[in-house]
Image 1 (spheres, rainbow, N blue to C red):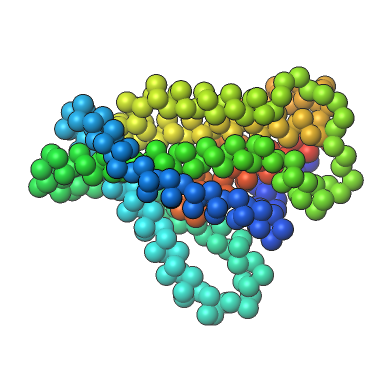
Image 2: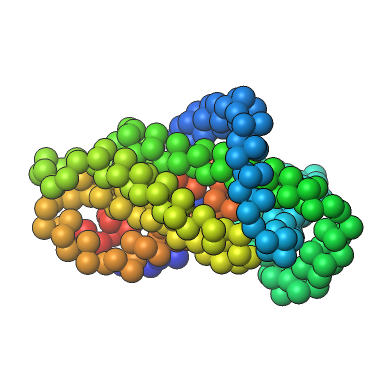
Length: 305
């Protein structure tokens, strides 16, 4: 039986097939453009709200959280710059060899560089925090720090809405998306005729609503460094776990298979958590909901055999 590492690699391979990648880009890019337009239209009003919220928070917490946000953007820039630098060196030398595997190279490289830079920043967190929070931000008046934090909070809110919209669109059109994977990997697979209890569209909307409610309730914790990352990972994993599993099972599982697989809660959560990590990685974040759906599909197919 194929291990989880094999499922991960197959999911990357399928995600990067052009017939699948085209669907991802045709969904992700238009949604991104829509949210850029909406963000530009509502930026000032939202900024007024987030600035008011920031004003209620003690300055020491604002400084610490500001340092965390700044380091996150520095980390994202470091990942992209190092990826561009390495690609500029490798591409001219090995272009003919990596031409057919360029998408694989990009995916794996971004994963590796993200992990490497994350380790550098986490291992030296105290040094960076002291330099930014206790020195750089102290040179600025409180209003400037608050406005900067409010601006970053605005970005986070609109980005979360973008991820949520990707999730909902994929949930609605998951059958069309998974059909392309089925035709490539499982050509003999037939969609299940059994009706599993509960409507997937209701489950997707329900989880989206719960995600929004939990985001509001846990909002104060988003200002605590590192805790905010764990909270966001949990919220995204919550969003993915049921929709991917139940949505896929409704297409290919019998009722008995569904209830047997439902007992593998740890695996279902693990897939959701791993996929959620990709939401933090530049470029790859556009692929996250699709990658999570493909991984769930391959895992279910493996367990059914």
